[in-house]
Amino acid sequence: MTNCRKSWPRWQLSISKPRRTLPPSTRRTHWRGLVDQAQAEITAGNFSKAHQLLGQAKQAQIAAAQQARALRQQAQLAEDEQLIQAAASSAAEGELSMTELHYLQAAELFKEAANLIPPGSAHDDERISYLRGEASALERQGLNFGDVNVLRLAVEQFKHLIDLQPRTRAPLDWARAQSSLGRVLLNLSNFESRKALMEEAVTAFRNALMEWTRERAPRAWAVVQNDLGVALIGLGDLEGGAAAIQNALMEWTRERAPRDWCGAQHNLGAIQLQLGNLEGAVTFYRNALMECTREREPYGWADVQYNLGVALAVLGMREGATAWLEEAVAAYRNALMESTRERKPLDWAMIQIALGNALLALAGRESGTARLEEAVAAYRDALRERTRGERVTLDWAQAQNNLGNALLELGRREGGTAQLEEAIAALRDALKELPRERRSLDWAQVQTNLGNALLELGKREGGTARLEEAVAAFRDALKELPRERAPLDWAATHDSLGNALLELGKREGGTARLEEAIAAFRDALVEVTRERVPLGWAESFGHQGVALMWLAERTQDAGMAKTAFLQIEAALETARVSGHGPLAADYEAHLPEARRIRDALKEP
Image (cartoon, rainbow, N blue to C red):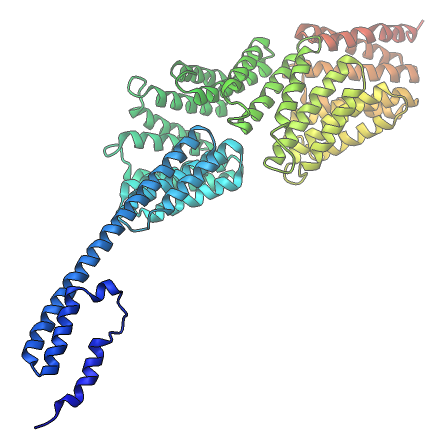
C-alpha cells in the first residue's frame, strides 16, 4: 500500500500556517473549527468528510467576509456622510463671510468645502456648487477691492467650472459657467487691457446664449443679453449694445422685473452718455432711480447716482450752468452713502475724484474758497485708496493731477505760496507715473497744469527762475499736443505759454519776450474763436491786448497802444457777459493803464 501521508505535511502546512496572521478572535471563529476538524479527518484518511468540512468552512469564510465588507461599507457611508455634512457647514460659513464682506475668507471656506468631497462621487454636484461659490467670492474681492490678481484667479476658476460641466453633459450648467466667465472678464477689463478681455467676454456671453435661450430660460437669457450689451458698449458697438439690452427688456418689463428693468435703463443711459446725448442719459438714469431705490438695491442705487452725476457734471461744464453742477454734487454725495470706503474702496475713491471735479468746476464760477477746500478734501480722500505703486498707479497719477489743480486755484485765491508749492509737488509726482509714450495727451495736460502752477508761483516770487520753468513745461506739453488731436487743449496751452512769456517780458525789459507772448496768444486764437468759445476767446484776446500794451509803451507805437486798449475793452465786456468775475476784474485793473498809454502816445 502506497504511503500517501508523505505528502500531507506540506498540504497541512498551508492550512495550519496561513499566509496572513489572523487575530485571536478570528482564529476562534466557526470556520476555524471546521478547518481543524477537516485536518483531523485528513489525518484519519477520511478525505470525503474532509471535503465536506472544508466546503462548509469556505461558505462560513465567505459569509464572514461579506459581513466584514458590509460593516466596512456602512462605516464608509457614515464617514462620507460626516464629510458631506462638514462640507455643508464650511459652505454655510462661507455664505456668512460673504454677508460680512470677507470675500477672501469666504473663498477659502468654499474651497475647503469642495475639497471635502471626492471628485466623481455621488455628491459631485455639491462639490461643483462649492467651487462656484469660491469663484464668485474671488470675483467680489477682485471687483470691490481692485485686486487684479484675485480677479485673474476668478477667471481661471470659472474656466475650470466650464471644463467640469461640459455642454454635452450639463448644457444649462455649462451656460451658467460661460455667463459667469463673461461677467468676471468684463469686470477685469476695468483694470487691464479692455479690448481683448471684452472680446473674450462677448464670446462667453454668446456661448451662454446657445443654451440659455429665451424659450428654455427666459430670465437667464435676459441677464446674459444685458451683460452682452454692456460688453458691446465697451467695445464701441453702441448699436449692438443697445439691441442686446432692448432684447433683455422683452423679459425685464417694469411690472414683472422692476429691479432688472432698472439695470437696463441704467445701461441705456450709458449708451446715451457715450453718444453725447447728455439729456437723454439723464432721463434714463432718472428712470432707473424710480425702481432702483436705496432701500431695495443700495449698491445699484449708488451706481446709478454716480453715473447720473457724471452726465449732470458734463452738462454743467459744457453749458456753464451751476444748477447742473449742484445736482451733480448732490448725486455724487448720494452715491458715497452706499459706496463706502469699507465696502467698495475703489468705487469710493472714483466717486471722490468725480465729486472733487464737480466742486472744482463750481469753484470756477463762484468767489471764495469753500468749494475749493471741499475739492481738495475729496481728492485727498481718493488718494487714501488710489495708492502709488500698488493697485491703480495711473489712477493715482490722475488723482494727483486733480489735487494739484485744486491747490493751484486755492493758492491763486488765497494769495499764499504753500498751496502752490504743494500743487507743484503733486503735479511732479503725477508725471513720474504717467508714461509719456503711452499716455501722451494725459502727460501733456499735467505738464500744462505744472506750468500754470509754476507761473502762479513765479508771479509771487522775485526773479525769473520759476517763470523759465513754466515756459519749459508749456513747450514740453506742446510737443505732445498736436493741434489736430486736441485743438482746445493746444490753444489753452498756447494761452498759458503766452502768459508766462508776458510775465517774463515785463520783468526782463526789451521786446523779445513780449513779441513771443503775442505770437503764442495769436496761435491760441486760431482755435479759440469768439463764436465757439467766447470765454476762452476773452482770455487769449485780452491777454494779448495786455502784451500789446507793454510792447506799445516800449516801442512808442501809438497804433499798437490803441489796438491794445480796444482788445482789453472787448475782452472785459465778454468776461462780464459770461459771468467770469475774476477775469473781468483783471481786465478792469489793466484798462486804466492801457488808456493812459494810448492817450500818452496819441499824436498831438
